[in-house]
Amino acid sequence: MIETPNISEENETRASIYWWFATVFTKELDKQQLAAYTTGEGAQLLKQLADTAELSPAVKLVNNHLAKCMALQHPELELAADFCQQFLSDSKVGAPPYASIYLSSSKLMYQEPHEQMLALLVAQGLRVDPEFNEPADHLAIQLDYLGNLIMREDDNPQQQAEFIQQHLLSWLPQWLEALSKVSKGGFYQGFAELLVAYLRLELQHL
Image (cartoon, rainbow, N blue to C red; front, top):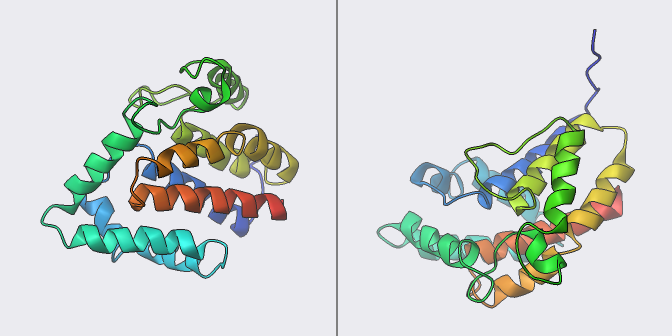
């Protein structure tokens, strides 16, 4: 019989938060998902995160932009346009969420960070969903992997800390700077700042 790891409630919550972040950067939000950020689970989670002083400014940025969007007739279209401009454009006009672009000298996709993530996924018996046709070093895939790592390695915080340092915070500050130039301080800018602040807090406690 295969033993299942004894996952603490705290680590289940941490994994869920990383998976939540991953959904934000995977694709455009639909109406139902957007509603969750104003009256549903998303709104509740943002409120909980705002209780931490280091995370509060980023949550405020997200909520301020949400309030502006919800005043529009089709807020989901506004956010979809932002998503496309920021994440589906090249690095000259957007802020693509791929580690290779920020960590390789060529500034191109499918470089060493992609190969490293592929190896990590294989080692954990994971693979990229074929329907999510993106390189392995896409931010959403890295966050999804981290959530899985937490659930599988409940008693190995060092491995989690190393992943955060080597595969996320090694390039996310550069990505955040690129995003600040194209986002006009909106919804995704707030979420990016929230993610980086959350990761830095995590390192203090791991």
